[in-house]
Length: 407
Image 1 (cartoon, rainbow, N blue to C red):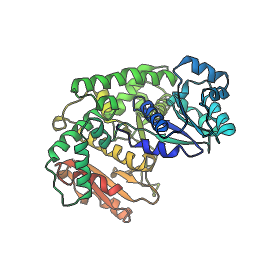
Image 2 (tube, helix red, strand yellow):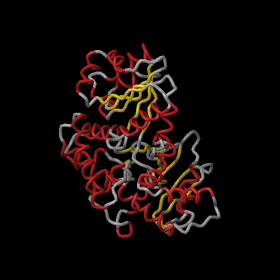
Image 3 (cartoon, rainbow, N blue to C red):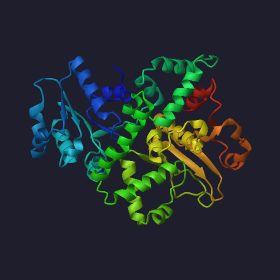
Image 4 (spheres, rainbow, N blue to C red):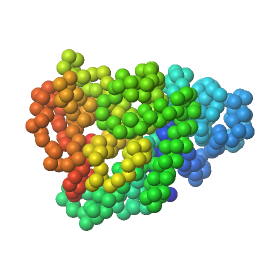
């Protein structure tokens, strides 16, 4: 059985007192992870029950009284794991979790998934402080993409390239083809496991049209057309600064409405807003974030552009968005910043985990790399090493260059 990378983290957290909360966009595989945890518990003789709150009978019982959950637990002297899928359907999920934690955490462990509507709720953050650990499930990484698409041999080849600086792979062209496919179609599991390219596109359109619509409904968005229009604009501006005033004018909507839609898109795990890194407030632009989508396949679907990289006008932007996802997988979105001065000097990414450790400039083609253009940054921050990441030419050192500096 193929497991996502997050499976081991969730499995290891089963013994902890805190409840485990699994977040992520729809269709990223949260329910599948819960099912795999259920199988693991049964195989290791951990008492377990799986409750899907799309089942109206179970939902009604738990809404009536959170303590009714105890009726579903198997009889056991051991601490029981309750896997609760789609917890946002409860009338008051935060109170449900708080009550069960405060009164029964010694013999009950809850692992719950829920949609964005749950996590937007301030009650969730306030009442569950110290009672939960949040796990973020993104769409598939490139390694997971290779495994799910039945190409574990190529994953092993990639790992061999990373571990051995002198190794030259005879499969490098196959890895390049898969990497480009990953950039174009993204990492939603249902898309990854679909071999036909047109069906991949159809599945992405279904995610765009059906599942994001559910996000819109549950988040209380009133103007669906404006929301979709904003999402498409952001897809076309990935890697660019988000100017709420300009978006407000373009969409003929209030600034507060745009801010609300941006918050919803973040809480639904579709976009990430990268904050600026600065030390000199007068010289450096510090207010507006840059936007990236959390799945490049969805980005391309919103733009209706699934062309090969070689003929894409936006290949540089697509590559930068892909680098963002690599960094997000490795260090989390909160540790990523960008640098820009009021004069327009810019560095794509500053990794600010603790003391700033790396500055990264992204170029599609190695021929575009010109270290002399970044003299101002080097003078301002001599302690921060500047690295360049490029996609073309895709050579033997691609993965060593793209992954190793940040691990």
